[in-house]
Structures are given as C-alpha cells and as structure tokens.
Image (tube, rainbow, N blue to C red; front, side):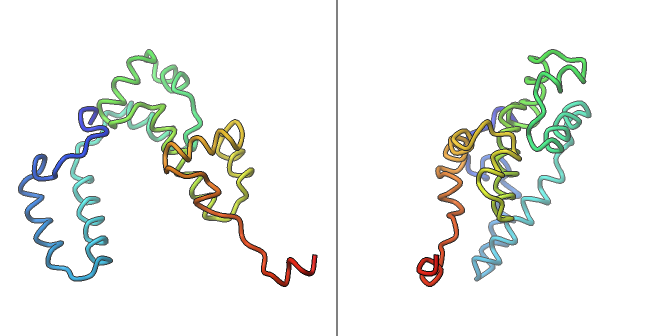
Length: 165
C-alpha cells in the first residue's frame, strides 16, 4: 500500500480484467446517481477481497478509529511492544498511510460528522482534540482546501429576526 500512496494511476494498470468488467457495467447505466452507486458498490466489494492486515496492525487501526484519531503513536507502539519506527513501517506498508497521517484523516472525518450534526465550530474543535479553532482551520485547509466555516457556514438570521433584536 505504501507504494500506491498519493499516486493516481489508471485502474487498467493495476486491475485490467476488473477494470474492463467494471467499465462495461458503469457504461450501461444512464444516470450519474446509478453510476456512482455502482462504483461505490464495486469498490467496496473489491476492498473486501483484499487480504486483511496483520493482527497487530489491525489492532492499531481499530484503536485509532475508536479514539477518533486521538491516541498517540507512541502509546500504540508501547501497547504492542514494538518500537515507534517498527509500528510506523508496518502500518505504512499495510494501510498506505502512517499512523499519524491516518489519525489526522480519522479526526477530520469525525469533525466533519459533528459539523453535519450541527455542533458549533468551537465544540467540534474541542471534541476532536484540536488545540484550538485555528488548529482545526489549518487541518481543514490541508484536508479539504477550505475552513470548517466555509464548509458549514453559520446559519443566517432571517431579515425579520435581525430587525426584532
């Protein structure tokens, strides 16, 4: 997985037979919504056929997810009885990202979910373990190219509410 991280490759180069079958099925659908649903289904099915990561790497991944990306890599390595370097190398080989990069993605995903639920920006920052709101803004810019406020703008008051206050 490490060798594919941050690469954009034609699927024909990696999985030619699967690519042809998937392409034919997708081309047969008229609706973009149907094509997207099929693409998600095909990719999910393909992912499920992959070999599972080694149990210690899977354990570390599950701890990262369960903590919302807040558990430290040093803590994971210590719990496994591995060196920091060994955990990072094994995790990177099997997941494609380092544990720290994975934690950032997990924390970002959690923050997006909380924003969708309507939590305030400051509550999301605190709940997700960002040091402060500017830290969360930097992470959002890095991950999404926009700040949380740009992704989920504050609700606008109606004109009548503005005049009444």
